[in-house]
Image: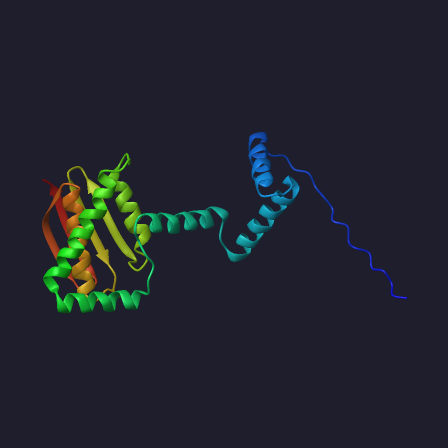
Length: 197
């Protein structure tokens, strides 16, 4: 006859938490057909797993929110090399039309911020642009009084993409009420200085 193995008893420990948070967690647990005990333990397991991966729960939540915001704001994910190749093809075949399309896209996107419910449309645009342009390691948009300077450095950007992105930024800045005063653009480098119109 086989020996019965005893199942290890799981020990429990109590901890203190804010009542309002526990009440809210209990509500979420019930909505998901879980006990508060099971839900809290699941959260602990996820926190430990995130820690093992070297990230915090805040980082995971912020990353998820970033993807959600990108999708809701009309951005799409794609292969960087394919994106650059398509930019090259469009620019080579229809330079003027491509530049105008990117300028118009900058105008359109900036209008979403200007006409939205943002307290500071330019700062929100700046934050989103930095968040959504993962392929650009150095992107600085600085607003001081009536001036905005833009500095972008990315050795991976081909000539065509650099010029198209410049046109996009010019359209956005114009929509925010800025006129380009100086422009230096070369492969992978964009430097713009603008002032209020």
